[in-house]
Image (cartoon, rainbow, N blue to C red):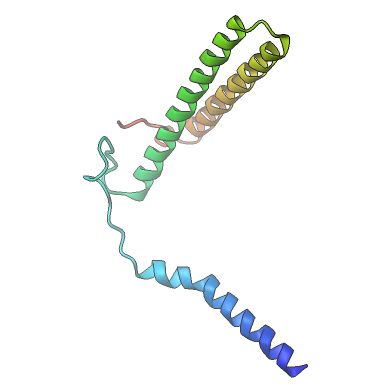
Length: 122
């Protein structure tokens, strides 16, 4: 019985060390901005600028992908004669429009909180 308890305590110690090890490791790392290393990214060397730029890139990619999906599904809807393919194309168009509305909603909510959050600086 004592061996099992000792075995479980050893596992607990290992888990605790593994859980708190990243905090010790990252506390010693010095932050070095990548201002000159990423083309088109002007963030003045602060972390908030990088997060803002990442958000803006993600929003742009989402909009571009949604528009491409709408265009492809519209082309597929026009060229297919089978009813099931037309239904699938309609569904994809609806989902892409819903995604665009979600992106717009996210943008509007964050703009209401703080307009500097969604400022595009490229």
